[in-house]
Length: 340
Image (cartoon, rainbow, N blue to C red; front, side, top):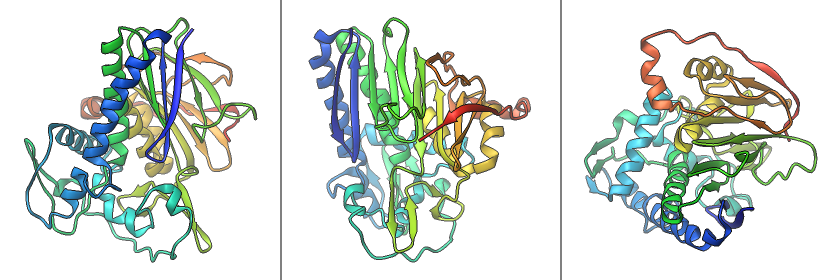
């Protein structure tokens, strides 16, 4: 028996599950602490957030909180580990594509953007010294690829420590678990959309016991302008929404931050993602635009509930080890059924 609750946050849904229902309120309190702190630090749509203050500093150095510094440091590590495929300096590109406010408001319509293919400034232009950040005058950060996943990691760890029970925190497609899992592990639905309940027979159920699991997709956070569909995954090499051959990427890793970084990078890397993920040894499920799914690096092929091996690897640590030995060739196996 578990305790469960869900509520809207940041244009998506937060889900909290605890192995002891009596500790649900305490776990919710811990979750709220982390969500409040991360929102104040990194919410791009809040004028009073630290991120907004930094983005409008005009090149001046800005002293930030320890949480913001941690989040930015992880974002820079992720950028390096993904060969720049996931880069925090895409803020201006997201605004240019029309994602300049909450996704619900963006979908209500607006002028068609004039997209210009231009490489973003790049993570190496960001200066971080302890808790002081300096951005070039024209650079705008977006920490969405790191902040939400880090909030899930931090909230799961805090809630488990405060309650003494097992905790799962899901923020949209970003999932982190901490503490002793329920009997049989944490059952997670993997599909294009975290709201999928499996009633249409699509997607796949897997089970994890530790770490994090994240799904990135080009089909959920998207909007229409004129005759074109746009989405929030920016390719740093072009500065426009990634023209990916994948519609969804799901990855299991040591933390939710690592899982989300790898899943987002996979969409940007396109056909090269399978070799890259296998080389890092990260279990992954990639779904093509036509709905055909492929299992990589130990991800279960069966559509039924399957226990996923303990995802001990972290993207940054695995990427640092690539220079010591060449990764194995891609081993992509087709998964029966279709993702929604």
